Image (cartoon, rainbow, N blue to C red):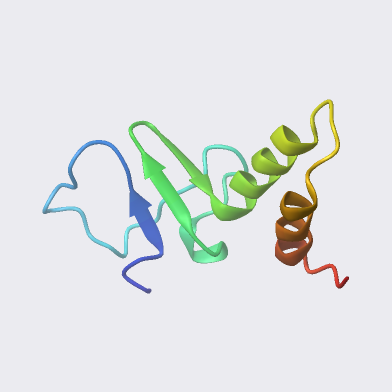
Length: 81
């Protein structure tokens, strides 16, 4: 597994903790082996896919996104312009 696949935030990493340990997304419950990236926080984890869904919701909530934000969303979701 790539060393930077799991990004830890918050508390310092325990030296005993192995990089190969499975880390599960707190939202979709997929392990870090099935997602692009995983952000590991204190007591909660979020995978890159769930993070993008959250960002998309926040951008689209109650207003249209800017052209730049829409381009980022389209790039992530694989939509050609």
